Image 1 (cartoon, rainbow, N blue to C red):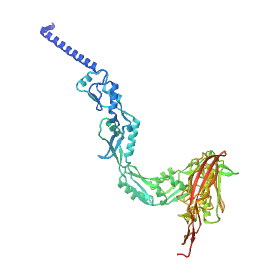
Image 2: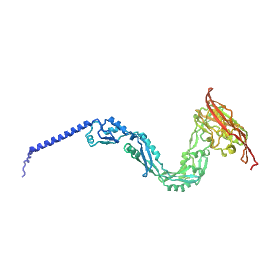
Image 3: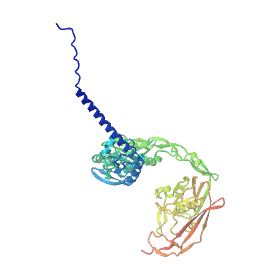
Image 4: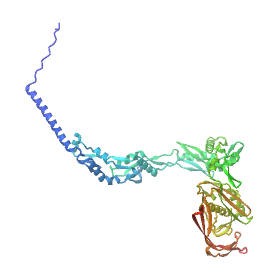
Length: 582
C-alpha cells in the first residue's frame, strides 16, 4: 500500500565560495569594458559633434569636419562645373543609337540640393554607428537633387516630340477613280517615364551617356490587308453613282465627284472601314439641294435714300456635313441602297442682324469712277467683276483679296476673251480688261484711307487711269489686296454704264484724304516696232516716266500722315502689225 506522506524537497547545496568570487569578477570586468566603450564613444562623439563626419564625401567632394554651412558652400563651389555639364542622351531603338542629344541640366530643371545633401551626410551629435563609420574611413553620400518638376516634364515631352515617329496606319484613297494605297509603317515612341528615371539617376552621378529607350509602335493592320481592300471594297465603292435627296430636290453624284472625298481608313486591329469627308462637298451641294429661299441668309446692307440700311439675317436649312459623311460611309460599308436622304440641320447666318448693326456702316466714305470706251469685249469683263464684288462686306481687320473673292476669270463665270498686257505686249485672254475695275477700287481704297497691302501698277502708262494711282490684276498673281484697318465694317457697292464703272465704300469716315502728284520725270522714249501674225495687236506708243503721288491724311483739318507712292512706267512701244509679212 502506497504511503500518503509527500516526498520531501531537497535543500539546495550552497555554491562554493570560489565560484561566487569568479562571477563577481566577470561582472565587474564587463561593466568596466562597457563603461570604457561608453566613455570612448562619448569622447569621440564630443569631438565630432556639430560637424560633418570626417571622411564624408558627396559627389566626390570631401566635406568632412565642416560645419553644415561651410559644407554646403564647399559643395556648391566644387560641384558647380559638374552640375552645369550637359547630360548626353543616347536614344536607343532596337539596340541601335538613332540619335545623340545633349541635355543641359538647367533645361531639365535639375540642380544640386546642397542643403539636403549635407543634411543626409549628418551633423550634430553622431550616433555610435556614425562614430564606427568614421573610424573605418568615412562615408560616401549620394548627392540630393532638386527638380523643377514642371520644367523637367516639359523638356522630356519636347525630347519625345523630336524623336518620336508616328506610326503610319494603312489607308486607301483615290487618284481619279483608281485606288491608291498608303502602306502601314512602324512608329517609335520615347518611354517618357523610363527616360525621366534614367535622367534623374544620371545627374551628378555618372559622366557616361544616358541610354533612353524608344519603343516600337506597330500599326494595327498589315500591308496585305490594305492591298486586299484596294482590290475589292475600294473598287466596289466607286462602281456606281450616289443619289442624294432633300424633299423634292435631288443631286446625282457621279463616282468622279465623290471619290476625292472617300477613303478607307484603319479603325482597329485588322479592320478597315470607309470614311467620307463631306465638308467641302456640302458647300457645293447646297444650291442643288436647298433652295435660295430655304437657306440661311447673312445680314447685309442696302442703300436707301443715300444711306446704308441693314437687311436682316435669316436662319434656314443647312446640310449636316458630319451626318452626311457618316451616312455615305455607312452606305458604302454595308452595300445599302445608294439613294440617300441628306440629313438637314438648322443653319444660322455667319453675320447676324445684331452683328451687322454694330459694324458702324453709316455713311459713304469714298467713291471713285473711271471711264472707258464703249462696247469692246473688255467691257463685259468689267461689268461681270463689278457684279461679283457688289454687296461684299469687309470686316474690321480683314484683308480683302480681289482674286480671293472673284477667283479665276473663266467662261463658265461669264468672262470673255479681251486684250491684256503680257510681257510688254497686248495679248487676248479670258478676263482681259478687269484692271479697269481694279484701278477704280484702288482709288476707293486710296480716298477711303484704308491700308494698301498689294497693288501693282501697269507696265506702261494707260491714259484713262490717274498716273501713279492705278493697279493691274491677274490670276493668281499679281493680286490686288487691301486691309480694312479701321474698327468699322466696309460695305462695297458697285455700278456701271457702257462707258464707266464706279466703286463706293460705306463705313464710318475717319479721314479726309487729299492726293498730290509730282510732275513726270526720268522720261524714257518709246521704240518703234513692226510685227506680224494673227495674234499681233497694234500699240500706239508712249514715253515712259516716273511719278510720285502722296496720299495726305487729314483729321479736323490737320495733316496727321503723308504716304508716298512712287511709280515708274516703262515706255509703251509703237507697234505696227504688218499682215503682208509671213
